[in-house]
Image (cartoon, rainbow, N blue to C red; front, side, top):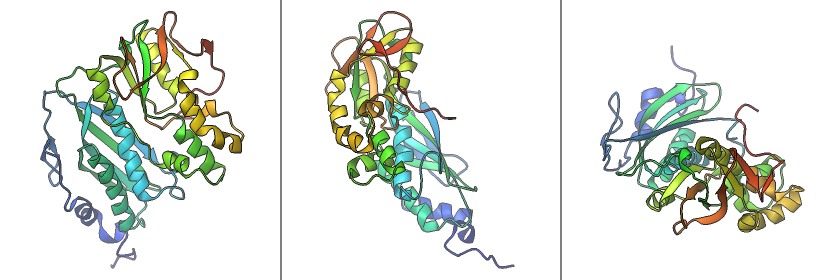
Length: 319
């Protein structure tokens, strides 16, 4: 019986024809010994250690296709996973991607998604080495990323010590501001709206931090205060954030916050998905990093200007 599915849909083309289309003419980086086409890929781990992380994006929860193009979604999927590797002091080298979507999804949309992934991965010299394609009631993208420490020790969340300097690489609050603008149908501010659709992690700064003596590090995925809370808990220290040091982030959001009738500090301190890097250093941070606070003695906690913050600290996955 002939299929009633459109010839250019995932169902019409079939799984393997779509996979062939997605992997055709893709140049893999030198670390990939065996790319797509076999049961598994082979990726070289230069010093015998591989950093691994995984993340999932679900349509309607982590992205909306009436806001984002498939290309945007692809870039976001790669960027947020690469940031986790950066936060360990490593470089992302290879990605494995599983994609679930309704059978009627067009092959063109799927190719646009893959092109966005490849564009983002190429920004730091990585490749997409394999994955899976399945039918699902909505778009679901699961990404596993491999990273190379190049002989470095990993930078953990547990190494912060009293007296360390707290510093950040990248911007804060832009994605949260953009989300609020999209969600409330507030026009203007194209840079903030774009920042929510595609984050801009400070690629390479994880390795700069590791080489510069970072004692602990994480990326800002859930919110600055929430993610600093993980460092405080793992290290058994307090952290004090200075709003004066974050004045530039606040200033960049002030106009949009006024239009939206929102306190810009809620975006700077509690907004996630910027994927900036935040780290502690025993001395001055390296170039590309700016000081935003200190590590203090006492019970694990995160303070703002010496006091408890009573607003939202960040994203909760099951809210």
